[in-house]
Figure 1 (cartoon, rainbow, N blue to C red):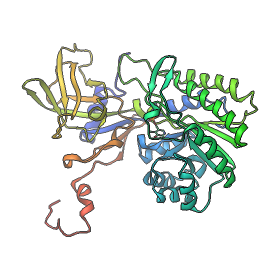
Figure 2: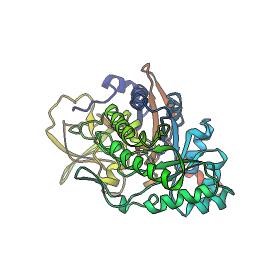
Figure 3: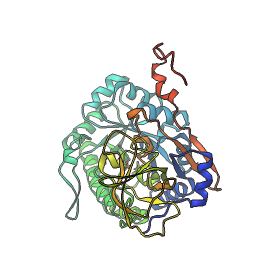
Figure 4: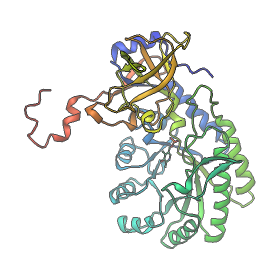
Length: 423
Ligand SMILES: *Cc1c(COP(=O)(O)O)cnc(C)c1O
């Protein structure tokens, strides 16, 4: 399918008058409509809740939108917990799915009554020592090992992933947790990332439901929720087909009715921790072409760099690019689209066929709404960009200002070494 930006050239030209490039732009309308679709797809399940994966886009304005849509949030670190707490998410609406967890993060999670999702068997003791008790409600993350397959295709490699309890550890863990006072149990698993198939959740659900039935039978644990976590992908490439969340919800329902209902487990809530699917397509990075370079290859240099969007540099990830106003032109120029880092992997696209780009053109880099801004860093002393919300009425709101040199140097403020810095 042709990928079109969620703003027009005219709209964007107005927006860049107010906010200098580069910046991430988010589409409130798209975010809300999609959150509603997720809710509807799982409305057959009474306790359903989406816990938005904060790490995808940790912005309080966006988190508030999800809160209004009835979502909770899934945190993985101290600052994410702090953010959820500051926005008055209730404890039951905060999932704490972390790994290699520092003691102070468990303490904070306990303080805000978040649901703790343990990543490892040894964390049972660690948690008990750290907070002095085992919470009544607790969840364990499952990793069956091996390869995760749908039909015959390999989706991912859990056997090589650092996360979760083995099957035996799940059984042992539930027994130990019960002895230590846990009453309400959850099961969590994240076995494949960015899946572009309607079969991922149903396949995962089936195996977790089967495990839940066995865990209940063998350990007597009262299983209250099953957390399918993240992993529903988005079509980064034009030739990919978008997931159909209604079909996904239906597939999970079928597994629920086939496995949990006959086992008398008809009140188990389904939770999700989607990140990418919730915001990915509803954000883009807006940047301007500032140089063209003709050497061994044709380069377009822009004012954004990997600091603003790391996925291409880190994973060779594809992000579609629209040259605003030239979308109907022929793609007869082969370019590398680069940022300014002293790293040759700082390229948003390599050998990409695009219309002829001129200095001053606005480029929209698609699907940066999740794991975009949030992965940013400060290499080469580059500063992080602003984030702007395109609201439902077409107006815009600055939801994070761009960093300034002062922010970059802020961590030296307890020394007097920078007293001659002119800012
Ligand atoms: C990253 C993450 C998510 C969200 O993953 P997406 O691919 O963005 O859906 C959910 N849960 C946990 C524990 C994660 O680490």
